[in-house]
Image (cartoon, rainbow, N blue to C red; front, side):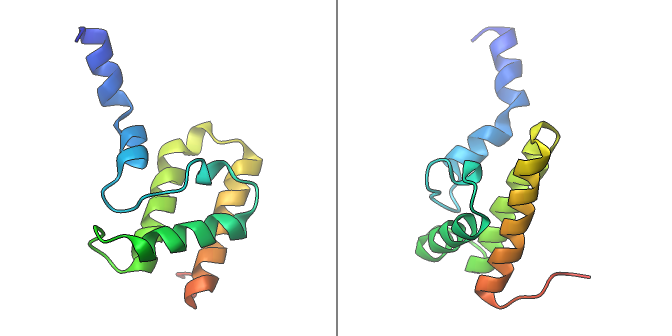
Length: 101
């Protein structure tokens, strides 16, 4: 491995985590969907099906969504960020949770 490719791998470790997470098996392209409710439902289903997660389903699903937003945030356009933020609200609603203060 060249020095440049090693640095690239280290720089983009978050992409690998999103694709290869031990916590959840995500549907392909879930974070690119345009329907926040469908994103939330997919994350919920993935979290509830997972046998490898270490946290409760809601926490695992929300953590994956927040991780993606935080890591991709500066590269997300405003519409995509708005959709993903709405997906957080939808996920809370699916689990009967309220937003933190």
